[in-house]
Image (cartoon, rainbow, N blue to C red; front, side):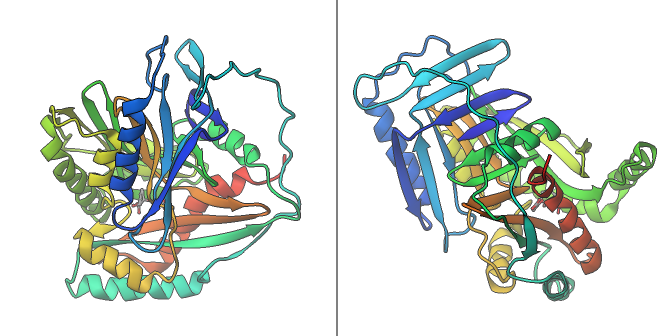
Length: 382
Ligand SMILES: C=C(O[C@H]1C=CC=C(C(=O)O)[C@@H]1O)C(=O)O
């Protein structure tokens, strides 16, 4: 498993224990399981930085139904924070320090072919039209609709190949791999670190052209676009409202900044708060925030119902929380965007867009295509 950003984070091997769960109680099941593990664990942590000591990594389904979720305690963790490096071993009996051996470099996927997933592009545009009709009728303010692509190779794909590329090309994102779900997400649902709670909210997107000067003009257009600012405002409000009960004070900037990624630019807001003594873990905070308006919509309940009704596919763990947590309940959960599920020689890629009353289905399809780019390119040959 992997959780990395700018070369910092953890890479893990093996499984010491795991909790598989599903349904509405998936977050509380996993939280209870983790608390029980922590209660009986003997932890020797000589490093004491985020990610050292006993940790688990998890990936959760977007929807209550269908979809499976998992929390995994790895056997071996190799971590880095700043100039500190460490190895953690975890087991139910005495554990030996593993020998860390250099592995062969991964090979690229062989003869990779892409095909539409549940819906073709044209069919998906039809679904977006349908949503726009509902939005214009005032039934809801925003709904996020996604689609999938299927990539098939001639032989099983080594996930280290796309992970290396994502890690180096999307440095400002969190590169992850948990139980077959991998990607590089630009959106941090929540981080809890020593009483400080932070969240990076994204919503509002413009595609990059490859011409830096032109992209700067586009960034300025994005920062002034009322459609995108409105969409962004919904997302920030949903995060601030969900975090409020857990924080004594909060800082919610009034204006977003533009986050530049190699494929797209987003309106972004970093929300920060001081956690009060409720002791809610980062996983409990992630459960309270999910699904934010960046992946569900506004109002949440209606948007999630509409997604189930018209989207035409099972999201699985795409757009669900993915991340790690330690024995104190500190950790980071991102939203599993710009992601894919790998199963042998087959990869299922996901991308979605926030739809509001003024959305143009053709433009949304182009935006979804741009959001497939990180994983799509990461699978390409050398
Ligand atoms: C749902 C996705 O992106 C979300 C995150 C950032 C910007 C978004 C947007 O502008 O539509 C989406 O809400 C995705 O990448 O699959």
